Length: 193
Image (cartoon, rainbow, N blue to C red; front, side, top):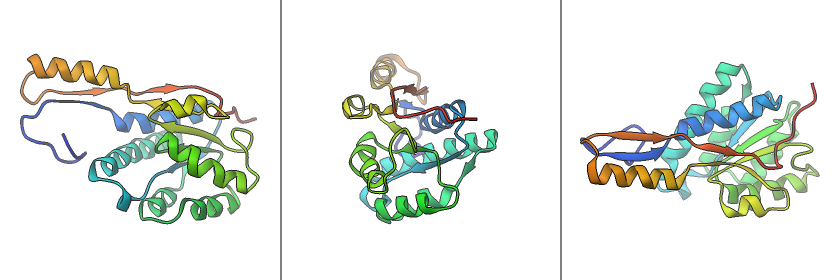
């Protein structure tokens, strides 16, 4: 499988359920009383089609869960970033609005650490005091950062086990989607009622 809306006929695959990743972030924010959230993505011009596809799947899940929970989500922010606007400009606009988000899902932990958090700090905003963040991929960077970053793991070992099982004995066309896991750390604060 190489793109979210097209498949190779008869191909077997084991992948993370990226839509579920977007949904789980929304549910996590909801459980911490966040009701105005955003999905911070990367520029499609800098991403191979595979990574763009992952972002679009996450966005679909994020959107669906926001609707279900009746949470505010300004999708335009994600598209501004996908279309190549500088992260710092988008963040400045986002947090200068009358109702800035209190929670951010960031596509890639390293993007949160190297781009987003420094842009927030330039605006005197602190994680998690002023804004909560959930990253994606649960990289080693996320656990070791000055504010350990909550992050969604795609469960690579489970994907590898399933891929091997499919390789040695799966049925033609068999598809396995692995549920991602949210690893809670210190970057998400519970909002006051």
